[in-house]
Image 1 (cartoon, rainbow, N blue to C red):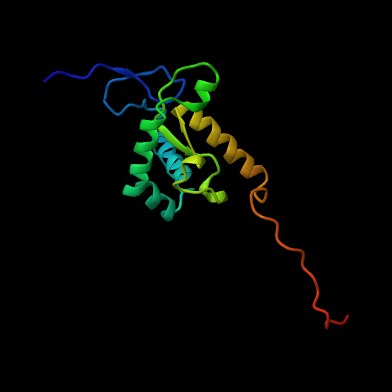
Image 2: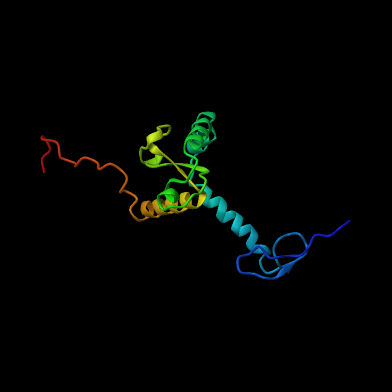
Length: 147
């Protein structure tokens, strides 16, 4: 039986050649589990309702139809580049009250543009978590309250 060709370690920046099929050298084999845990932690930001929505047949149909009508990345097209779109993004995120199926709230993007826009939105929410929420009315004391 033929053996696999040795490949470099999958850890970023490591050039050690690995021939055992694990993908990681001895120094980074323990890091493999930590990286998978970190990825899982990042994905936990999605709640069950959001996951059900993106897995629903209704969303898949809307997404497919939108990509047929808008085959190019909107951002790249605006910069004079021709890049096929493969992600449908909500202009106003659903978490901030954006309409789920409204074509006016959707845009076709390539993965690169989607990731940069989503990262920017996430960073803005982290910096000011209350910015996207509507302001609550001022609290007033009842008329019959005495000090």
